[in-house]
Length: 146
View (cartoon, rainbow, N blue to C red):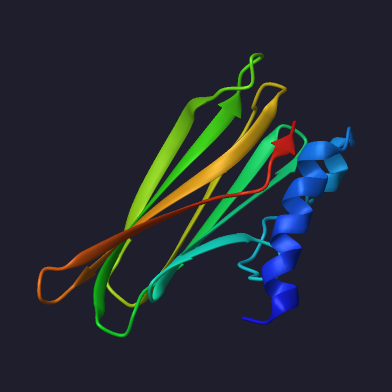
């Protein structure tokens, strides 16, 4: 991944969380697609997790992508939509999970009629190999206000 693709997600996340900006800064009118240049990505060893959240009105679109090493046989992807409390702590709002029997996998979900507040998506990935080994990784999306 080039330097621009690695710096942009960090810059976008800082921009979204430090500016008193309207919801449109973190929003998209349509369901997002996996885009390594716009998502927050965390890599461990030879695998990585990607977490992306966008909003439109009171709807949240959650996308996660995981890619394992060449010897990956199964990936379990778990998404947790979290809401920020008044004191700044993050708490569970809802979650989903899915399994891919490949070296890569996607998980897309939508949550409608959310109350106003600041949200983020946590993606937790577990990569399994044929010899019984596994590796875990997680990533957080940008913050979005509804």
